[in-house]
Amino acid sequence: MPKLALLSAPGGPIELADFPLTAPAPGTAALKLRMAGICGSDLHIFRGELPLPCPFAMGHEMVCEIAELGEGLSTDATGQPLAVGDRVVTPYFWFCGQCHACVRGRSHACQNLMAGEYRTHEHEPHFVAAHGEYYYTSRRQPLYKVPEGLTDEAVAPLNCALAQVLFALRDVRLGDTVVIQGAGGLGINAAAVARTAGAAAVVVIDKINERLDVAADFGATECIDASGMSTHEVTERVRQHTDGIGADWVLEVVGVPGVIPEGIGFLNNGGTLLEVGNVGIGRTFQLDPSALVYGNKSVRGVMFYDPVTLAIGLSFLQHTDFPFERLMPKPFRLAEVNDAFASADAGLVPRGALVP
Ligand SMILES: [Zn+2]
Ligand SMILES: [Zn+2]
Image 1 (cartoon, rainbow, N blue to C red):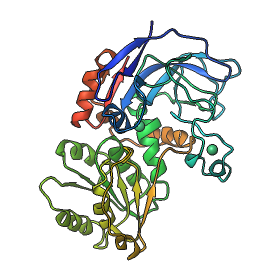
Image 2: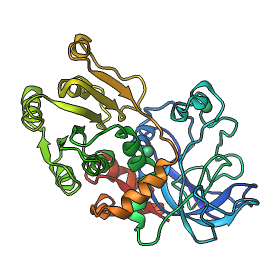
Image 3: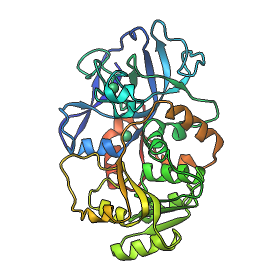
Image 4: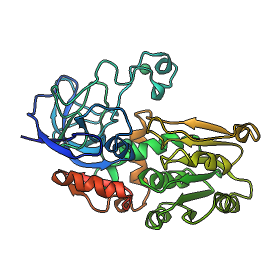
């Protein structure tokens, strides 16, 4: 029987459980996994930083191929016909379409996320997460067909990392300056997106040189290794590369609360810090709020994205030539999922990858 990875308890181990395949419900699809990513959120869940019940089905970032189409599902969200074997991507979440936020065009801020279709591995169709051999969509998850010529390594991070930063950076304009705190999978994708959007400067900050090396190949115009540097020194370096005034945008993708005040210090007057990385709950930081008031600075929380971002992301992957394969250097087999998490947790690769 096909397998699904379940976190047995915070900190692990992750165990592979067998579940039977079922026929997909009308309007849904049974997908066969091709490659999954291990995202920062997966690591937060693995460490027990999110209040989720164990055993918990792991993973949400993936590229799959169609194993079986449910009744009535014959095209993707853009009208392209679908057939068994086609590669597809899909958002890992869905919106209600009816709440205050949804009807005002802010569905990414839906108040009834996953409404009516909350799923657990305990009930059919069982395969409700990415770290398994199969994944079943719900009726509200649109599919987007993957064009030929794109590698699984390039596409696997699209439905989380790449789409998240595409959506977070959607207001970046030609000539803006962007600072990215953290050169993990999100940060490296963000550098490529910001540069392609026409940012005049893309400054990436991390404390691991190997990750900055990768960022340099993804559109960063300046990489700062902050290990051994004071906040003052890092801020000075940022100013040197942002016309002496600081950045229009700072994207926080370290996932550590303490870097937020530093990030606000990198902004110019009117600039905005995009807070994406801190999905762990219950951790705090100290801030003198006058740091926001003086200079009209903002902090914007960003989570989820408009599903059409996946179509934009596929086009982005087709029409840029960043070395996306470098992001997923060493896929682990699903059977080695614990080794894969240990490697990703150590932070030495931008993103862990799993293949069946
Ligand atoms: Zn993710
Ligand atoms: Zn809603």
